[in-house]
Image (cartoon, rainbow, N blue to C red):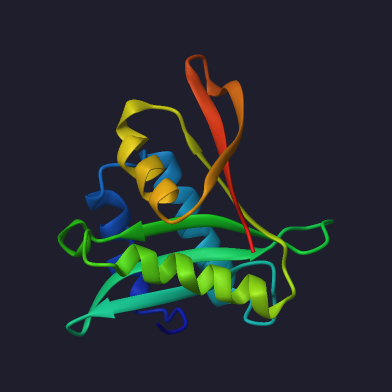
Amino acid sequence: MRDLQPSDLTHLNRILRDTGAFTDEEVACAMELLDIVLDNPAQRDYLVAVTEVAGAVAGYVLYGPTPLTSGNVTLYWIAVCPRAQGQGVGRRLMEQVERYGQSQQGRLVCLETSSQGSYERTRTFYRQAGYLEESCLKDFYRPGDDRITFVKRL
């Protein structure tokens, strides 16, 4: 696990696209947030952990303290190279976020995801990591695409 480096951007863009889970707009948003982290190293709103397998970038997680809350952490983005999925890479990234939360005397790690069928594997992954579905906001992203919020209490 290590900090984000400028040379990671090309690899992370490819990983986001290769997962097949994200639209072009979502990839652009994810990349914009990574640029914010690199362009403003003093900011603490967004933190990034990058992981490698056999010397190659295998995934990342972008997270941070939830503004205007006491002890909440938000997981904004997580992506793992399809070839590295099922090898514990994603779980290690989630554990990084949880360790951060605990180090900040955090109470909750929150994340949101889509209700679309293409996200079923993602939702299963969150459940297996001990996250519980806390809420569902119908038609949030677009008609028929609900926002599901998962929470893990630390």
